[in-house]
Amino acid sequence: MLALLSKPASPAVDWPAVDSPAVDWDRLSRRILDQGAQACWVVDSDLVIVGVNPALCALLGRRAGELVGTRLPAHVAEDSRSVLERQAAIRGLTPHRSYDVTLIRADRTPLRTIFNDSRLDDEDGGAPPGFCIFVTDITRHVEEEAQRARRVDQLADAVARMNRFLGQICQELKDPLSAILGATQMISSDVASPGPADGASGQGTAHLGAYAALCSDAGRQMMRTIENLSLWSRLQLNQVPLDLRSYELGGLLQDVLEELAPRARARDILIVNRIVATPVLGDLSALSTVLKHLVENAVRFSPAGSMVMLSAAPVDGRVAVRVQDNGLGIPEDQQPHLFRIDPHHAAPGADGEVGSGLGLLICKALVDRMGGGIRVFSKPGGGTAVTVTLNQGQRTGL
Image (cartoon, rainbow, N blue to C red):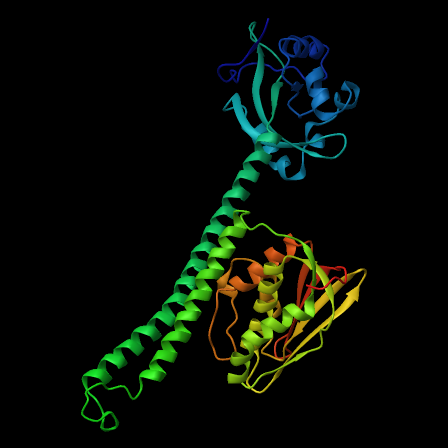
């Protein structure tokens, strides 16, 4: 009667040769293979397959005749063959083993499995040195584990980038707040110690106008950051409804340029607008926000005394709006990170200030929702061109 060996066989046992007539491999393997539905094969001491069951054939996508008589390593992935040979070499010491092996199916796809093998023995004291190997398919489990590991890595990366992003936002709020606090401290000092120009009134108001202007600029900067952060948050929650209509891009852009004109004049930057009556399909607020961010970025990253060029052209039934500056440019390795929350790759402006990159994130989110696209072309020292592609609208005006 066939059984699974529970202890190593005695060295005194005279094992018959594998090709000996006394070895009835069919009888030995059938006893094991017919006992269950789990994929299983029986091999001899040379790892030659002497029996397989239907479940094993189905697992590998092969017929029994294609397997019996071949060596087991022929159906094992190359990186698992050394594992298989090593396990075969130590079976005399440990008759029951479990280990991972990658099999190769008939269609050459890999199959991750666990081998549970036991050395065969007869209760009457003698049997050929054969092995019964039960095979468990763990391919799906391995793939699911790999997917979970990738998701964990992606989540960890997202958390790290979000932490850096929040740190940069805090810095954007901290800088103007420091300016406001510094100005208020100077105001307090002037009021407490009036100069000769202030007379004996003790009001100390000689520099109040300049300090008030500084506080106003810093306050507006803080407000822009807070508004951008609020808009981006609502975009992530899909809480920004859009009303798509036809608008003349030239009119919208004129409003944006009037708002940004003081900032451009302060840095002696000439904005050349070549966009006239160009109808596009979009949301009024979203279009204004995108145009403002793009022109504002161009002014910010352009050196003093340079020029920013605005143009538009029809492309395959759509409108390509281009904002070109002659600024510092963006290194190639940083460009893939422009539309991600990754302030680690944020580039400094012409005056050395570093932003969070939130403006471009908002632009991409809004343009995507309007059915358009956005691309950046840049090289260090060669300036940057941002092209926004929008659906063409009807010439109906505002």
